[in-house]
Length: 239
Length: 251
Image (cartoon, rainbow over all chains, first blue to last red; front, side, top):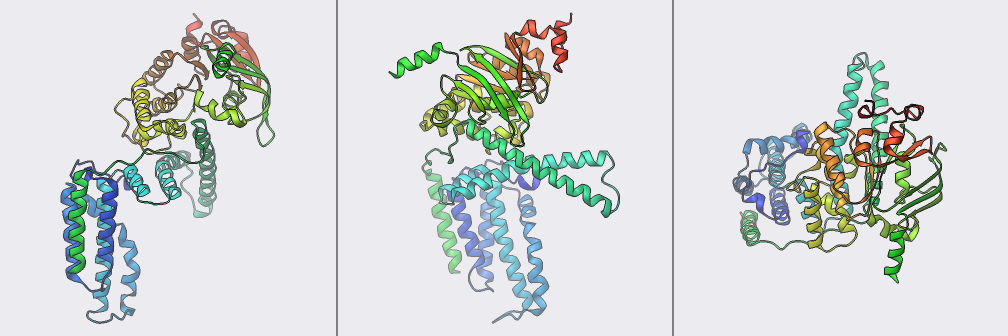
């Protein structure tokens, strides 16, 4: 489950910033790292410096964030495998093209990893919702995150129950029906749980749309961070 | 006018159920003609074997399930238009706190009910703090529910309902899955609440501590209704309905 727990509570400057500001800055940084002419080492270098600056502002452990960012690796397999067949336009070879794609994806992943390490998930969703993300997506993401933990625990218990009765061994032929039944049972239990959650919500006066408190104003620190980040990212666009 | 209505409701029984029948969607009968009245301030235990219909009966009292027969809570039928006001007054604590706590922060979850009834932000915040302190979870508002123990989750689930300022509390197995300390904490919290309570439970020692009156339900019918001490010490009755005389009464 640790893969879902990204937040590192270091109490850094970045952690204390409003989630809306952090989302906006990180989004701009991702756009900066993934646009422009494909071969642009100065811009990518500038973006890397900005990511490093965010790491420092959050007093985050670079290694932990780095490990999180490696989730992009599998997605780089396709461009890497197709490199021999690519024809790079303009300067540089096909391999340089792959390297540029890799660098851009990795910078984007690093940015997201920093954002998630410095912002509790609930705050991220709050911020995204206040920035205009559709309510239904926020609700889905929130329920998904909350119940993934419950579901994984349930799946673990089911698997343990099977293994303790010696059900985990055997050939694929004998194990597959058991696995199928387990998945079906999990699905049914999840379905029933969803019904019970809905009942719980109704019992507390839910009428189809959750109400939430009015947004808080940005603090001076948020404005300062936003202005500085905007200027630096704009500069990175230009280099 | 409104005041007089409320006054009349105050003298009435808070819960009145007459001839309630209900069958599950697959046709299995769950309740077969249940009669039950509960007066203001009473603390009543709902006991009976598994599958007796205890939870099903509770779900009828705030309109989540609707069977045939007469149900009136605070003089209002929990269906249609009366339901909205009713759900403010009736707090329901479900058996599994993972069903009840569905948001990502404890504080958000406790605030969910008060926000739904449209209270202003300061009032919501005050109620969240008050409810969490009442269950001994003050200062935990920022925690994620999946980081809490079962006992803590149970207490937060209770807080989510207390924040609604209910007048009637429906509790489904409030002590199940708790260690003795967690169970003791829940009993202490419930004993201190001056509300009308209906508690569905298998924990008969808890019944003796919290509920002067018990209603024994089996196969969808009320089999016995009376003082807890008399009911729970009746060995033949208890055994006939899948229960047993609590250890502390066996001498």
